[in-house]
Length: 69
Image 1 (cartoon, rainbow, N blue to C red):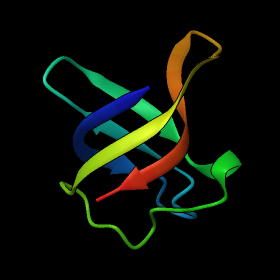
Image 2: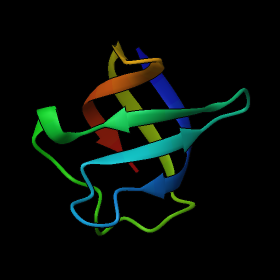
Image 3: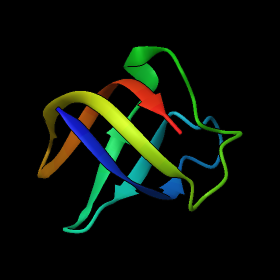
């Protein structure tokens, strides 16, 4: 799956996750399993995320395999 949107929140410590807002909603993107972080990427950056859908408790998120900004 590929999504485009704007990063509106991120992990303040390690940058291992962020929230992406597109035209329909906001979804959490987990980058830890892919081995990269977004700690140095500023909020409101436009991004394209590739990954797979996963369930984390009651929350649906994307396990990222790649990010471009």
